[in-house]
Amino acid sequence: MTTTLITGANKGLGFETARRLIEAGHTVYLGARDARRGREAAAKLGTRFVQIDVTDEDSVKAAAEFIREDAGHLDVLVNNAGIVGAGKPVGEVTGSDMQTTYDTNVFGVVRVTHAFLPLLQASDAPVVVNVSSGLGSLAATGDPGRVEFHVALLDYNSSKTALVMVTSQYAKAYPAIRFNAVDPGYTATDLNGHQGTNSVEEGAEIIVRMAAIGADGPTGGFFDKAGPVVW
Image 1 (cartoon, rainbow, N blue to C red):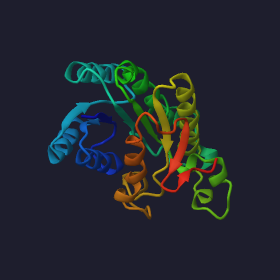
Image 2: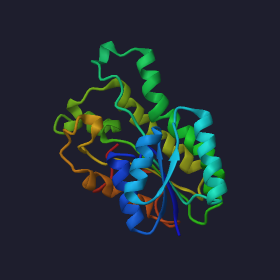
Image 3: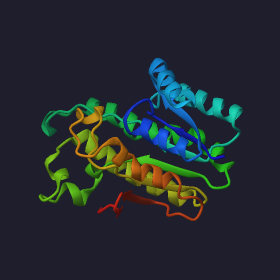
């Protein structure tokens, strides 16, 4: 049985990913910051809830200890929790805005990964999937023919670029663990006011696919549903 933790899984892409992986036979720990919403979501799926605030070191450590005691290892970690950020014009974004966005989208991924590395290393075929975005691609955001070109979010976009490099560095440091970043595409979620053109079912496809790659799959890459993301 594959043991999986998904952060930010009480709604949207995280919830759909949890649903799909449960269907595939995974034992899923549904991670969420809000205990009430997390328990409600876990109850709908018939799975375990783990309270985890990726911006809080103690919360992350407590979640890791809970899963260590409950399962003894972790096969798949999906770092899905993220925020859209300040939503301001580029010139109005402050250092404080950047810090807040990075605290979830980048530092939060590092906190969670650091805490769960021992449990991942106890797995026979550990996998980490970091949910990035096409808005983190230099090539996509620089191409006037792509939708990413028209979305100017200094804090959010750059945080997703940083996340791809974070993924690459972990992949090189831990070759026994499959680390990959994914772009779900422009998916209709709370993050964009449900304006995305992809459904959550479509957006979750690449997350689910990369969560199931196993020990022989790629590592250190950035993928969307069509394959490697232009970088």
